[in-house]
Image (cartoon, rainbow, N blue to C red):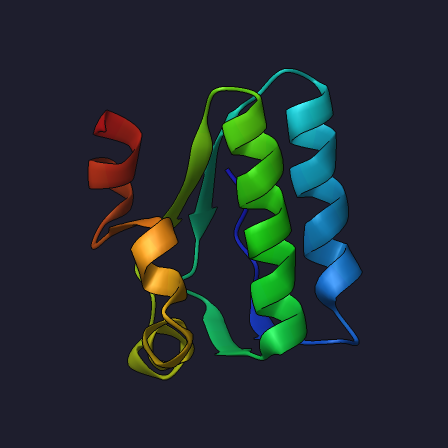
Length: 97
């Protein structure tokens, strides 16, 4: 599980990309991203999550997003990306799924 905080944009995207790619390379195909502390996500951040999803799915898993704030969820709704992720209201739900 990773918990990005603050803004996820072109300045900070690698701070999330690297641990997600490392997790998949270590055999963890089911990735849980706790978005409860994420205040902003731009297209670069979205692309990091989409890229992680492709790698996780290729390994037989997926990316589960948890507790997105409305401003972050809106980016996923506008782009249609919410349809390709499993989104959970709570961390407990994501971990139990």
